[in-house]
Structure formats: C-alpha cells, structure tokens
Length: 409
Image 1: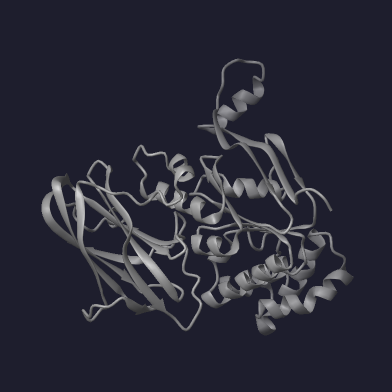
Image 2 (image 1 turned 180 degrees about the horizontal axis):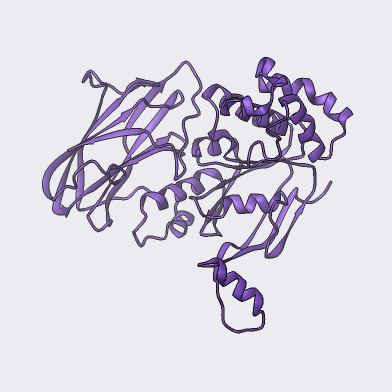
C-alpha cells in the first residue's frame, strides 16, 4: 500500500480551564455574551508530521509537553479541536495498561473482553490465547479475579494482551516504566521483533537510552509544539541540553541545526585541571561494573571568579546519545557555594550505576548563581562499564535516567 502509515495534519487541542464549576455553568447559560469565564490552554498547537510504514518514531518531551495528548488523539481516545489524523492499519496502543479491564473478572475472561473491545471474535482470540498466557507468565493466577493481582501481575497481563493482537501500528506511551527489569527487557525484545517485522511503531518514553536504541527518528514536543524532528542523536542531544540549560537564553534547536555536537563549548573563564574516577575503595580506575559506585573528582580553575557555582554531569554513550544526568541543584540537602576564584574542586558519586556494557564519556558543566552557563565540555573523561546482563535502566518522569547521586565540595 502506498502512503504513510500515520499522517498528522495541523493538529490542535484546546482546553477551556475554569476557576470554579459555577463559571462553566455561567458560560453555558450565556452562550452569546462576549464575557469569557475560562482560560484557554493549548495542549497541542498546529502539530504536523508523518510516520512511514515500518518506521519507529520516538516521542520525547518533558511532562506537560503534549505527548500523551497526541498519542490519545492518534488512538481515537481524544478528538482534536482542529486538524486531522489519517491512519492506515490496525492500531494497538499501550497508553494506560489495563484500560477496559474488569477487576471482578478473571485474567482469562479479561483477555477475551479485551479482544471484544478491539474487534476480535472469540475464535480469533482463541488462536492468540496461548501466546498471550505464555507472555504474561502469571501461572495459575490467570484463572483468578484480576482484583487479586499484584501491580506487576496486572501489568504483565495487560501488556501481553495488547501486544499479541498483531497490529500494523503499535503506539506505546511509558508502558515500559513499570514492571521489573526482566519484564521490561522482555517487552523491549517483543517491540524489537515488531520493528524487524516491518511494523510501524510510535514509542514515547522518558528513557532516552531506549528511544535512541529503538527509534529511527525522534520528534521532540515542547509546550505543545514540534521543537525538532529528525535522527535520534541530534534531537535527543538538543532535548537534554534544553533540560540542563533551562533558564538560559540559548536557543538549543537553532544551534543544533548548525552543529549536532553543539554541547561542546570552550570557555576563557574556566579550565578543567583534572578529572579522576575512583571506586568505593578509593582505587583510581576507568573500568567499572554495572551496580558499582563511581566517584568522579573534578579539579578546575576559575580565572575571573564564579558567583555561587552549580555543577552538572551528563553521561554520553560513544555515539553521542545521552543516558544519564545529575545536577547539584537537584539535591536540596547541599548548601550553595559562595564566590569561587582560583583552583577549586568538587566530587560527584554516581551510585549503583545501571548502564549497559560499553564505553562512555563524562560531560561536565558549570553555571553561576544566575544560571548562566560558564563552561561545558562533553569529552572530559572516558570510562568503560562491564556487565554480564542487559540493563535498560530506571526511568524518571522529568528527563533521562537520573542516577542516585551524592555531591561533595
């Protein structure tokens, strides 16, 4: 078949926000008055893009950027205020796992209920039943009421039902942020099978490592609008830079078009004297194992002085995909620094690192009290992680993987 699998044309979603219920009633009773009792909020504003057949498109953006609203419009859960969506193929969505399940019914009965909601006959679901039960892997609990399930068992059943109806288009919204690591790995492997089979996938996640691994293109939504769309590396770098440089006047997207490695900046105000890495026993090294603590000690020289410096570190893979971030102002327990001039140092401890085996680059950035960036360099230290397992890492709601961190001055 010709044409894209998904075509989004100038989608806008407007919500009317009322301060109190009576304002809604007043407006309904006075439809012809010029007085407004509501405020307008655009969850999406003039969003357009296409997804080709067999393509995996990642969707990134901070909370409130419009990601979930967009995906709900694509699946028909929400209706856009203006614009239109054209899809070609059977859609299965993992938006709110278990939506439509009846907690009084057994897991087995809910599988057939899910199939009915999605237009499948009992015979068609019988053909899929064995693989759904095998994927869920909840044993005899399949015959027990869902209200007895743990949250992990519920997620297993919901994901298994949603992903085994053989859709042409699969839409995933943060479904992999739940469940244990073994189950997340299993889900990602199943999605990867979809990709290899030429299915069309829209994958929305705060786990930028997974986005970078699975997606051929990424769309970044910012305040309901498309900030950038393109190959994963440049888009994710722009997004992470925006998150870490919030409060500055730099236009990240424009600079990213000129130079995909724009996060490399030289500075005449700061010079990094040394960066060293140690394990928890104080042994200096550059090879660590998944689950270890890494102690980074950074010495620098501030030539003209910095008023109340803040620090951040970002971990990049060798292919420039960012996978971890931490900042001093994330930690409210540490006191701010005063005026620093001359030589100074800080230590950051990344605890229980959850990284796949491979080589990584440590990026360091320094801001002043007014959140003006003074220095940033993404090639200050290279280290290696060894692991006997595949780690997809925990996810957070705000940005990339945030390791548990301790800062010392």
